[in-house]
Image 1: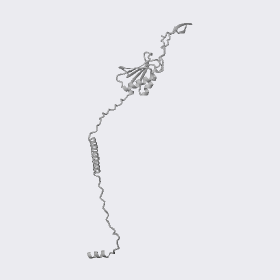
Image 2: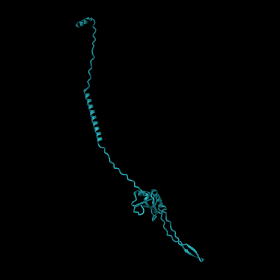
Image 3: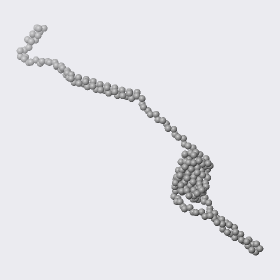
Image 4: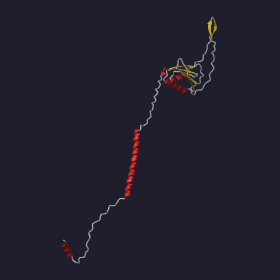
Length: 226
C-alpha cells in the first residue's frame, strides 16, 4: 500500500500545482438555552392562578352548599275565616210607617220604597201630630244589623234628617215616623176650627100652619191620607 501511494505521488507531474478542494462537514448548532428566570416566573404565575382559582372556587362551592343546607325561612300565614253573610228574612220584618208631616201620601210613598227592597209586612197610618221635621226611626232590639243599615240608608237618601234609636216595640220590629223629605220646606200648621151646628128649618104642614124644626148639621175637616 505504501508503495502504491508512493507511486501515485510519483506519477503526478511536477507541473500539477492546483490546490486541493477541502471538503468540510456542516457544524451542528447548539440548542438555545431557555432563560431559567423566565421559567421560574411562569411556574410562579401558574401556581398563583391555580391557587386563586382553587380558593375562590372552593369558597363559592362552600357558600352554595351552605345555602342549600340551611333551611329556608317561611312565614306561616293564618287564614282569616270569611264571615258568612247574614241571611235576611225581609218578609218576616214587621214595619209601621206613620205620616208625621201631614203631607198627603207621605207614608204610602215610603211603603212603596220598602216593598221594592223586599219588605211586605208594612202598615201605614198617621202620627198623633203632623209637625215632624226629622224622620224618627226606631228599631226593636233584635233587628239584624244588615236590616238596620239597609233601612237607615234608604231613609237618609229620602229625608232631610233621620234620628235613629233602639227601643222595645211590642207589635212591630221597626217604627218609622216620616219627617220632611229632601227639598221640602215646612208649611205653617193651620189652626183647627171647631164646627158649630148650623140651624136648618124644616116646614111641616100641620093644619095650615108650619112648625119649624131646627136640625143642627156639623162639618168636619178631612183626615189627611197617610
